[in-house]
Length: 129
Image (cartoon, rainbow, N blue to C red):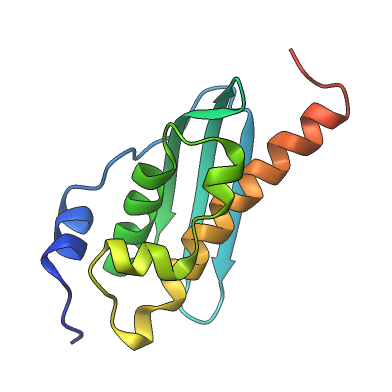
């Protein structure tokens, strides 16, 4: 059984920003078939900033904690700042992840990045409201 930091346990037991955003500006979905974790991030963008970030995660405690932390780190940031959220930054914010769970931090950063890509591709296709 891996040892988790108090911060990981807090975000696992009391995850922030769980749920879906109705009519999101971007959706990013990633999965890791090896461990079975699935993450979906939903974003609302206003004036190039992430006005709201929500997620749904099916996975282990570390995956849920990572999703919660990424959503907290990304909220209010510009798209450029949000793209700079790396797996290592997420792990550091959570005060470390066990080596065999570090891949979870990759998924969180990837899902957020995919949601931003989704938003930008819609915006560039003239799908802006």
